[in-house]
Length: 559
Image 1 (tube, helix red, strand yellow):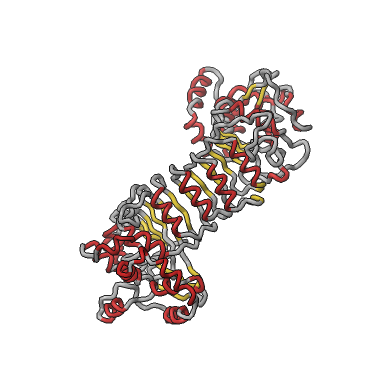
Image 2 (cartoon, one colour):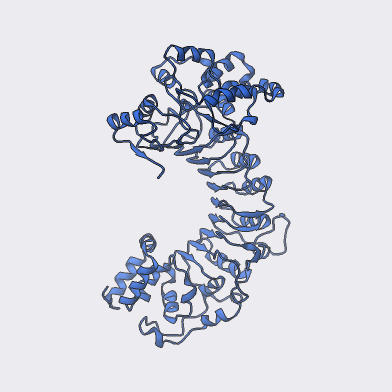
């Protein structure tokens, strides 16, 4: 790269770097090797490249370089996203006077060292009232992931207070990802965060305009989170997952947190203590929720999941994998009176009846999707659902007698199968029947609850629902677990309106997909472009049919 002149080039450079979107895109394409190469061939790299590199820079080793500090002072207004490497980096983002060295990016070795060098030799003091924030247009601030290393590597809590206060309202995202707050210089959050008790304090804490808070993998107390979020009333994106270690943070505490954040649009709480109470709080308080990730949590009430789908009009992404949801109950709620109103008469309904089983774990994507299923025969509210991940599995001991009966073939289905008109999956495992026989001896006390479970206590409606759900397959894989699979003509028939569906992922080895299944998918999901987990050696006829009739559908394996 040729050395750039400092004349008219600066004007063009400043115009280019004044476009935040362009600078951010360039920054994301740079790696450490590229930065080093630029430094070697371009003596002006401090003035040309640092405004770009600063978007993702780990700046700890640069603070002693006077030319770096010079570039910081001259281009700090271009910085939009900053990842600090040390806690005292925050202190060095303030300036009370212009730099004492000439603004010449060349011959940096001859330039005198500036005062910020000494800040690494001891604890950083508080920010003075006359000091100015350098990065006035900062949008995203990420603090270090590591623990407190030594006493010199500290920032006082009111330093962060001043920084956030002076950046309000430009700062929109704050990241404490993987931060270990037990040894964090901000302590337990008592000095910075507002009181969680709601009591009036002598000094009123300022509320900031933070809209996104990232605490994935953080280790802290629940008081810290409750207090911290009380400072951010406009919070719309909150990520608390990725095995975050939150002391004493149970379901009721998460529910309390959710109630305090009515503007939430994105909430990620995978692998936390998120449970039924938290889900109810989301349904009642966060009507604009668009993204919810509660993968591997403690939600057990399928009725709550059903209510979420019925009431969350803005929901576009829902990850509920590894939840212990009650499939028969959800099916009852979703079909509701629609099942009792009529038998299938249209061609589409007949096609539903002719489909087979698909995976218990599937990913559904659609740009705009309406899902039939209100218990009153209406439409689910989440019409814009783009991605749905819902896994279901039951221990044999968890199934009631009523649920077991729903998973068995009824007499009509057996007659149809005998006459060659069976619409289910052929060739079940021999152990499947044994599992059904063994299940009849369990939980005799469930009969009382089963009567209450019958939708509307209408025998005729329940009988028709049972007939529909009789196509759910039961496969005893390990003698301990029963995998309940949706059938397209019962469970997944409810997803037929998803005309924008573009991809589906199926679990290998749990079910069989034949020609009828892929024909149904092709007809009901005309925009389907990929099927993941469908292997030729296990579904040869289905794969052959797709390659002949729908070569546009890509078959993706798990590799």
